[in-house]
Length: 359
Ligand SMILES: O=C(CO)COP(=O)(O)O
Ligand SMILES: O=C[C@H](O)COP(=O)(O)O
Ligand SMILES: [Zn+2]
Ligand SMILES: [Zn+2]
Image (cartoon, rainbow, N blue to C red; front, side, top):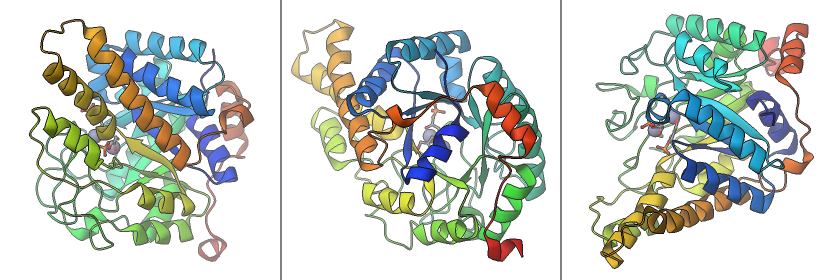
């Protein structure tokens, strides 16, 4: 069962004006719940594994799990993507293990803590793109450092996150530099920084333009109308999931995520890939907590997993529908990695910029 590439899926999404959620996976239950949601609404799927996920499940398990999902859900094309690759080895070994797409996150150095220089970012992203495209795989780059405009800090609890205080210049991607970056690296998708951060604690209030800069996205899209933009840290941290967790013994301080309507606005401005992990974690954990609280005598993990998967399915289905991903899978004819490699070699997939900037 062939997986498809990120480039193919996002080209289709751009052509038809929709966005695709990219859900992080670590285990079978998440994989099944996401795919069942996709099957229920004819959505193509991006599954992504962080370095932490690869360590947790193992590359061999992940590869066979995704192959199994592709076989079980033949109507829902799957992109298997490396989330936040920190160097060439992470990205190239992912491709060797069957991933069809990688993120080379050169916004941070290899330690995933130190903000990198622009030159370092261009150099390593270009190197990975050259290698990946030679075998048809796709590359997402990142320009700008993810972190809060309220505090100047990146989420500390996450696998990757800048250390220390960041300036607004670092936290908001520069549109002119974005043009230069895409031309120099030839990446297929560009992750941008606009005030979102990883994890549950993104905003201390419902975000407005001061702390969530959709204007940055608009300005980048104006200069790079054909570049697929990626929003990281795009969990909405739904109030009802915070309440579910806290009503069942959890202690999550009140917090705010990225409102789904802001993401919908982003999709109208060129956002094609929307990274969501925290919401999925909260959906499952909320149900685990509820079962533990309501049925203290219960010890069969399936009795915990089934409601957790149902909660995750609901969440994924909602995002597929609101982002316009629903109804698109059956319109896609898979292109093989070999064909993608020839298309890159022919120059057909070279980056394009707005006419005003090309002049
Ligand atoms: O960006 C992400 C993965 O790369 C996930 O973001 P969240 O923590 O908002 O879900
Ligand atoms: O940003 C990364 C994703 O949320 C995955 O997090 P993780 O590294 O804890 O698996
Ligand atoms: Zn994260
Ligand atoms: Zn991310």
